[in-house]
Amino acid sequence: MDMEAICFQIITCVGSAKSAYVEAIGLAKKGEIEAARDKIKEGDEFFLEGHHVHADLIGQEASGNPVPTSILLIHAEDQLMSAETAKIYAVEFIDLYEKLFAKGLI
Image 1: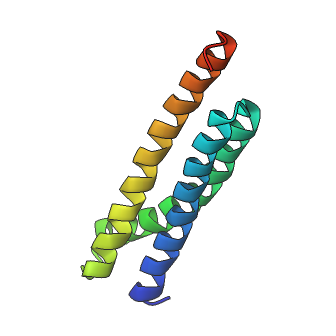
Image 2: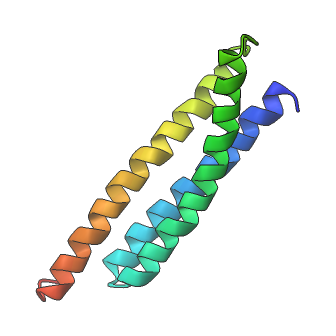
């Protein structure tokens, strides 16, 4: 697979993950906590796929086979980190909404 295709594979996977994490927040906001947690798991599956592709590139580089750097690869890595951050916040929001609903505050 060429480098451009690899980058787009990462971008597609982690983009789907990030979308699932954002959807999870929306579900939690409506009080659908279990559905929100399920959506996090769905996002994790996408994220893991993108992470594995990225990890393969790191392994290639570590084995002495340089990976060509491009703006597309930088964008793919940026999207990977952005999705990871989105998950962190989504999990926190879900926990917060769960507590707010349990206390009858919303």
